[in-house]
Structures are given as structure tokens and as C-alpha cells.
Length: 189
Ligand code: NI
Image (tube, rainbow, N blue to C red; front, side, top):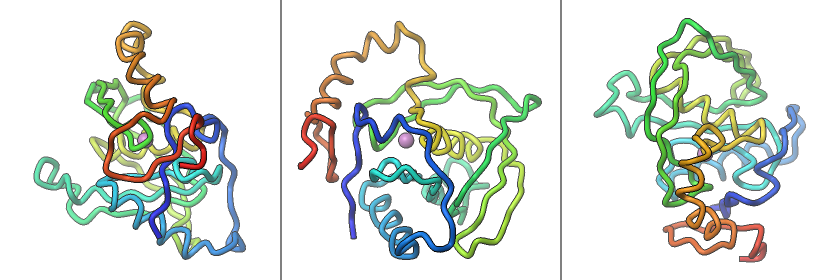
């Protein structure tokens, strides 16, 4: 089932999300719905707050970027209860980011592209790995959602001022994108 994507301005995107257990209701179908929603909106990652749930659950599929970043071929994850640490010895890079919760916005974001991530997969098996490069950026972007942050929190006040009218349109639900959305201004859309 394709779920509506919650837009910038909605308070669900500003809360710190909570861990889940194996008993979380209908978890398998929730994860399946997140995949379906992400693919339907041509996203490469989706965090549970973006579908209105403040739980620590992320899906990522970056295979579509394999032409540009060959190391991303076949890379697909479900991350449950992830914990992330940015490693200071990584390369600092600025690259453009976008977000399904901020349609039409693309901004350059500076990040240290090396992280250590611990998480549980969909069978609740534990993992502990270090990621670098573009994938570490995607993971940080999605992880930000679990902490109540969005990528434009990382841009300068001047850049933010320059996109203010676009942001106001998103807050008011005035977006033109090819997927279902839900805004704080038009909650029943
Ligand atoms: Ni996002």
C-alpha cells in the first residue's frame, strides 16, 4: 500500500523517534509499505517519520545510483533501531541533497562522509559496519529524520532565506509532485 508522505512543517518530522521491538504491530507489512511508497515516489531512502510514525525504521535502496557510484550496485537495507556515529577522519564533502518531504528543494550540504552504524535488519539480526562516501551521506540524511532533523537544517541562514517562499508553499501543502502528500496545513489531503 502506498502511504502519503508527510511534508516539511509537519510536527512528526521534528520529534525524536523511538526504538521498536519485534512485537511492533504489523511490522512486516509496514516495511513492505515503506518500500512500495519509496519506489512509487522515486526515492532512494525513506524514514518512518516521513510516513507519520515516530519509530526508528528506515529503508534505503541506492542501486539506481550505481551508474555514478559503482559501489552502490545492489545496495539495499532495512535499518531498525539504528545508532550512528560520524567518524572525524572521513572526507568532508559538499553535495546536493533532496528529500521527499521537501519536494522541489535541492541544496548543497556539507557532511563528513564516514560513519559507524549499528542496526538490526528486518529479522532483528544485529549489524555493525563502517560506511564511507555517498552511501554514508544517504544514511546520515535518513538518520537525521529519526532525530527530528531535515537536510535544510544544515544549510546557511542566507540560503534558507532564499528558499523561504518555497518552504512556505510546502508548509501550506502547495506542492506539485507525483506522489501523495500530507501537510500540517491540509492534514486530510
Ligand atoms: Ni529526507
